[in-house]
Image (tube, rainbow, N blue to C red):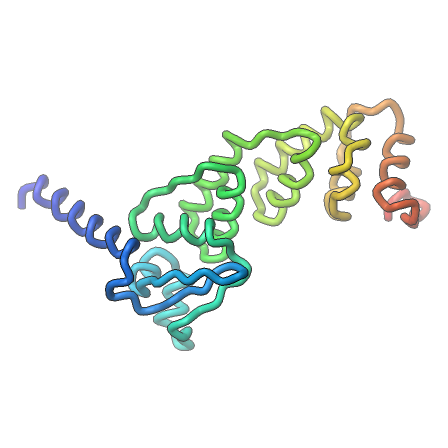
Length: 213
């Protein structure tokens, strides 16, 4: 067969599958995503081909029903994931979309999409006093090691300013503990750290003899 014919046939199939994304035609499962729920009519075969999780859900021994609730995933993240599974296209336009899609891709073990989200964040995320701790916590949850490292490096270089920021006071205990493990920070003395932790804990942090909490 002429190679050009193979390419044309592949393109035709991609177009046909892609068209299903915009249509409820032949859909055989509905996802109720986010809170309040948004309905996504889908096709089990397409999803099963692109994700081992979906394959197990639809074709495994214990099969899901034809209506599936997914309250922990955003509409944006789910929609971008569907576009990837149906068309192989990835269109991410914001940090929010990248984080939401990365969570969705991680949940359904779609590694190429997850890596694309991570690449977008590494190339486009802007770290500052307002965002760095939030981004770090998202990166930690998603296990994005490079992004975590970039955040901690930023904290280390800008510690004096960050220790007095409102975002520091809103950081999680796990994040504070990770910051305390940093070897080098741009501060004049450890007193600054102690005072910052006291403010973070609202003056109620109980410290032991090793300076941990």
